[in-house]
Length: 182
Image 1 (tube, helix red, strand yellow):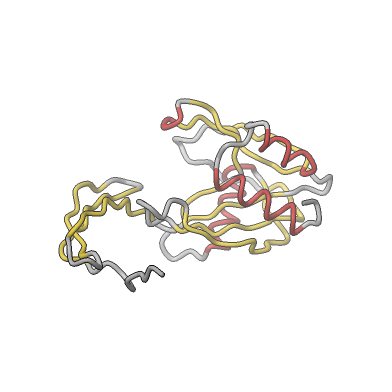
Image 2: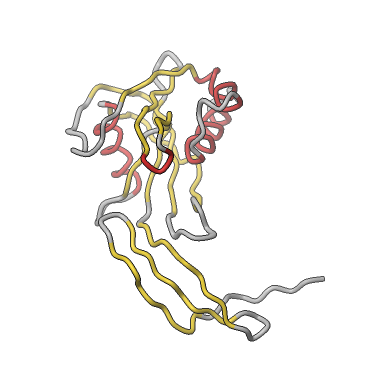
């Protein structure tokens, strides 16, 4: 049976990039064997994603261009948690900024690491129901199209590759289960 160390003690850490959204560092760590290795880590603040479901059973999603994929993705609304905000407050703000609605009800679905092999981003996922129009100005660098997709069609859309974003896949399947549709 293999035993695993409690952790990989950091010997040194070197920041190599600081940006508006991410920072990048390289840590030198000590392995259980005593050898040293490096870990490249993208530091990212916590974030949220939300599955907004209207009274007709449609999910309000966003289609937007994502430069790393060089294409448009269909995603659930998501965004960062601002300094001093709770995940719930960030979710309500993002709903207004991205789809022009607020929600009477927010239900926590789960929380998860997005890419734990190289990134520190931890995301909180919510289900939003009781939607009502309420618009906040969107971020100036976001160009978003709101798309309504019947919740009952979500699993098929994922299987067909129409929804390829991991946070969206996970949160949509959790929401379908929470609503008894999956």
